[in-house]
Length: 319
Image (cartoon, rainbow, N blue to C red; front, side):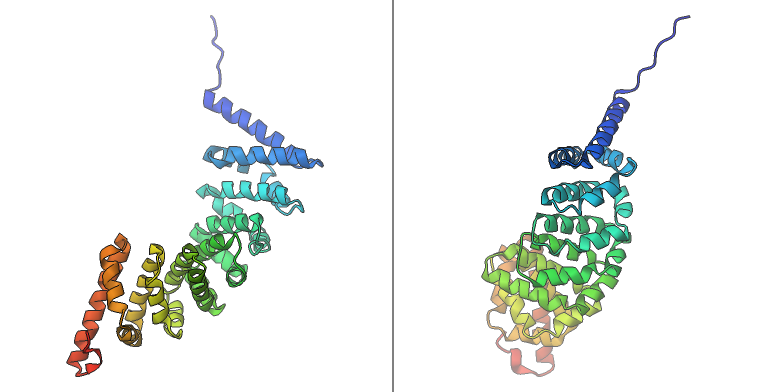
């Protein structure tokens, strides 16, 4: 009786070949020759960039993660960049985020995130990616990452600034991290970024900073720090006068939160002669989200104005 030989499925054969290629690349990545290392790491970066399956195959290869972490500490900037790129690619897989965020890795990333280079940008992106898993957020808070991010934001603007802000935005979604950020002085630092970014026409950076401030304001610590800031209402009104719609959305959101928190903020806004016209303009010409926030602001202004008449206070009679 004739027997039919069994052939592996095409997908299985492909996985076998990729696994063999990964092992070969990992071996070459530990070579004493920079050129061999670079070529191997470039291949690993390429095959993990778009394929979740390849990321899992690399992560499951014995010794792969320790090798990549060791190479991310290389004195060669090119080797370091390739290694961080691969680790970032791996972090895109949800099932790998928890295992990648061990405390040793986090401490290592902490040493790089404030570096104003491509490595710093990649390290910040990796922090942001890992922090998207809620279980990882507290780990970064305990490891001191929040303090380092706030410090990095307060320094000179570099190519990693947006990535640093994005990492902070993801981490402060956890209440404990928000508390740490506020105590570290994140509110005045971020407001300074908003102000300086407007003067340098980097309004995208201002918009991201306002987004982080909005996240901080979801919790009592952040909202209290904002409401106690001198000239906070006039600062937000200056943002409303700018060109960046993302910034206008962020400023309108903050004003709504501030109005709910403090009657003094409402009075400060109503004293500004151009506030109502700015809000009215955004309610007509803004983005969908900005129009929504502007409509809510207008309603709060009208309610406050009506309340002033009920109380017999003529200070808002110009409205």
